[in-house]
Image (cartoon, rainbow over all chains, first blue to last red; front, side):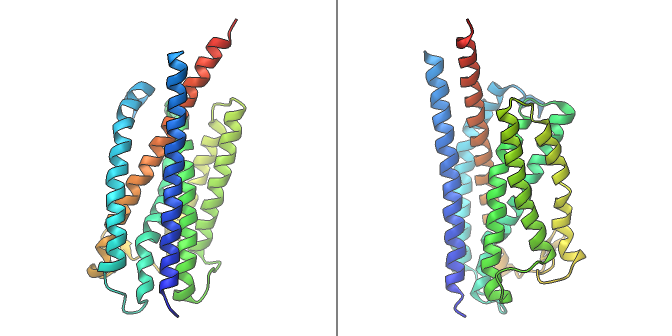
Length: 42
Length: 238
């Protein structure tokens, strides 16, 4: 059995899910902090 | 921990810490994965599939670490009434669930060429699946409690009770000797050859840094939401 499709799938899944988690947390934080700054300025 | 009870003081620490954790975690994770894929040798028995080790082990550690964080935050909330504890608990749940899912997924992908099966109702695999479901339960409970304006105590109690599963996961390979291998890495040493082992600390520390960065970002998001809600409540008053 060729092992590389399994290795590639495991790494691709881990990288994809981790990047999605990081991006989701970053965008959510930036939007929430921008809204807090905006309401403070009003 | 009470030094960070004040959200303003916490944010003074969290803002630079988020950037440092992202930078250091990112560099170490990429270095560890490249080393694990290209520089370490194949295993004499498993061949190239052993390279899944460098992402599976950090995922398993962080899947469990997330619940250690929830249990610590729950204890802090119930016993010491730390004002940020409920937020820290909720912020640990999503990354914890994500890494528990990655543990199950990468383990399943590794299991097919190594064991000849995608899944087996073995003690380690089953207790890790239970941990994933506990995360889903905690997330649902915590968000429902927050929407109703609760103080988060129900989720905190659930977080403490769920911690019972952690020693079960850890000792499952000793209690039920089925398909999953025994402990290869303990506090006293490792049975893995040093030539194969060295990229593992890079990915373990790297992914831990990224995990901590996500927790801080989710905490900052909740604090910002709380600020907006408090301001809107004040302005809505007649």
